[in-house]
Length: 430
Image 1 (cartoon, helix red, strand yellow):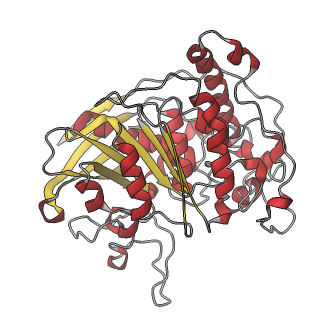
Image 2 (cartoon, helix red, strand yellow):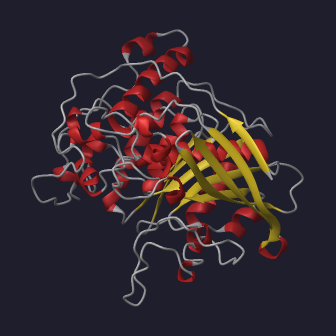
């Protein structure tokens, strides 16, 4: 079954435009001259001054919501042009192909597999979307949507889910390379991160796609994946404010939400939470900030470039992330390597941009690379904006909606059933 949807070119965001950006001739690699040594000592956090969240004009406005909308637009424009990169505004076409629908999980759930086709005049790109919903639901259910790291076949042992044919990271089994191709050895490898039956038992759904379907996670100079569909919007030395891979993955999440809202009647499109772990937590934050259709935004151990304050420079830093993964952010972001204090924005402003929709940030006590304390501080600072909005009521009762959630799990960099139990409880209020 094929359905289609055609977008129209969108106008660029209005806001502050930074000019006079100077990049080195080696903008692609962003290499640091000195060997990186991570700091994990709070006493060695550099002195810093955070950029203002609520400026004087916004704070003095009689109608805070209207004033914040202008301030938010300004901040989002800066984040786009200086960090994540702007997304293309060219027209594209979507087609939705239903591959299968079947009962699963011993009758507990309904499994659907869809193929989302994105087409432009330069070609087309398929993204495989896997959706689970409770089989006994009386109507559309709230649903989590997130990208996975290894292919849809890794989140369950179900052999009805085909191996991804997209590029995957090298993984040696018994010393033998996989040549960047999926194999049966990877089936079910990520089940601990996707507790499908736990989610279904709570009356909710979960949907996922492989992030490599949208854009392969290596520095290919933006010639593959979704970037290839928009060559006129490719990042370059002349255009250093255009989208990197995180922005591309985020844009892809919105296209998956298009499919869910238009085609999948078992999902309540007004109650979809975008969720992600690690680099995909950074992705979920940017997707949730840029696409207000997401009812809830969840960041799990997202660290630098995600929920953590960049200026603290603990664990992974701006310079380190731009060196190891030069394709994640736009080229403009590399000018802040070893220079975080000159950033015109910081991550508490991004978290605040989600307001007044609920947001949940989670950290892990041993995940010092992701700076859990910096993630907590960032959310705490964002609360200043949330406090100025009237308290929302739950759709099913007069109880107020908890709009800020946080937990610190004991353990390392991961997402597991314990984390999900808190996300499920937080989601129930929507």
